[in-house]
Length: 80
Image (cartoon, rainbow, N blue to C red; front, side):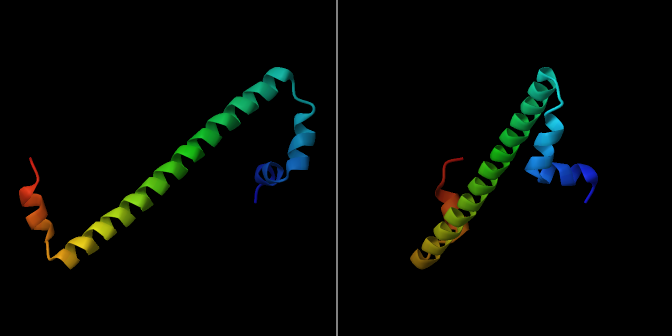
């Protein structure tokens, strides 16, 4: 772990370093952190949607198999 990573992972150290920062520097750090948080949130939402989509597709295939319908049959009746 680098020194930077160690500082970022320890809230007290991070806070003590930032105490000497100017207001504009703190605002820049806040803006960057907000961007990173938003990116992480979007990535998490995308992963959740992908997992949900895979579950729905698996459920649908299971129901189709129980009903004796193949994917080709389903696709043939769907509008193009």
